[in-house]
Length: 105
Image (tube, rainbow, N blue to C red):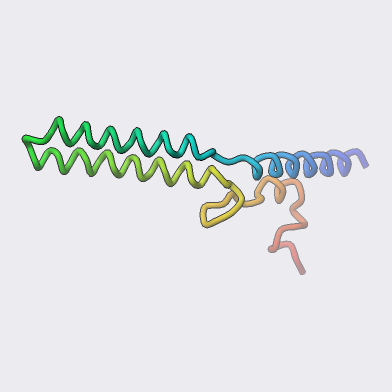
């Protein structure tokens, strides 16, 4: 009986954590600051390397790729339980393996 109680408590705690995380998001000020900073950095890189067009293209491509990866990463963490890059319910399935789709008869 005690093991069942522990499993229920673990499931409820996992549920609470998911509910708390699902309400979190990144506000518009942080997105604006990130994009403005990235834009200003790209302009600075372009001005510094304006004499060498090949180096300018390479360094701007590398930085723009890094900015793109950062934006996608932040977007995926902004709403962690919705969308294409959502977090699965793996923690809940660990404490409730009978709820797994593969456990159905």
